[in-house]
Length: 79
Image (cartoon, rainbow, N blue to C red; front, side, top):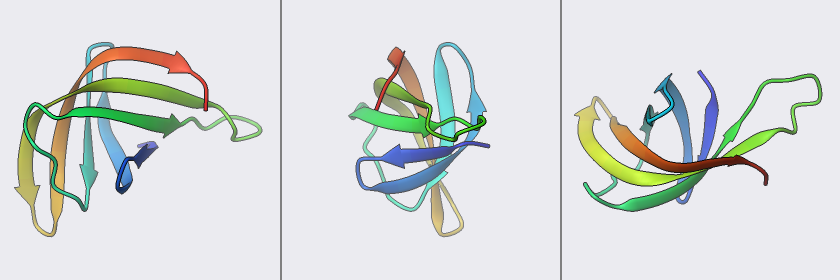
């Protein structure tokens, strides 16, 4: 589980692969919506981040949260 900095708040990852990511968050996102977000990596100094860009491919309610699946288009190290 990694924290994700989303355009409208924070989320937590559930699954990550080379082609996509599944995370939970408090905010609804539209199917097909383009999204840019940061993943904070756990390392010695805690400062490494992955900048991710993709499209929302699945949206599912879960209690008071949303489960969001994103198909990745680009991933790079950065801020």
